[in-house]
Image 1: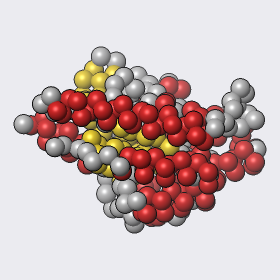
Image 2: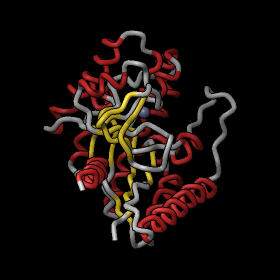
Image 3: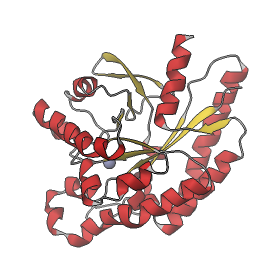
Image 4: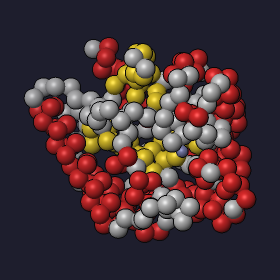
Length: 278
Ligand SMILES: [Zn+2]
């Protein structure tokens, strides 16, 4: 029987996360150091964990993070993980008023990372998960093959936006399966509080359990299921010691199920496309 694709994805935003929340953060070294924690401590801890459990993953890295922390790209790449486009600056796309400015930001990100890994970036995740009216056209122009942004389904499908269909494969996301929703914290984000580790762990396991049940039901009924599980985390958040333990417990839980397969985004895309040809 086919296995349910499970994707662990990491946005290595570094300081760009904070710089785009509030441009004045450029003068706040403590706030920026929250971002620095990702490349310095979170990423190595996560890479070690993924290696321990033999989990391949997908990393979306802003070009600026790759520049500011030069070990980030080589350390991900040497472990065989996928690396994809997450812009240069991490500017939120819905803030762009000029197409060229948005295009140049994505192109700059690619121009920095591609020579470091010797291959083209095939995937795109939007900073802060939104598209401008230019985004889709830019992704097509850049030859992007997959996107991981939309929240309208639990299934892998072709990307659609603004009523336009594409042949870009969409790997669906959700705020429920995002560490930032529970743990992105700063005194600069009013009203935010960190959630208990156990409740997030339970939430991520419950999401998995139900999706797995539904996947198995469909497969047992002879339906070639497109249900998937896409987790989105940030090394500066999930890379804290206690939170990394939550990720470890989730990996162990998922691995107790026989019909699952941890895959990178290109592996999920290839499986989906092969199925369309049948
Ligand atoms: Zn990001």
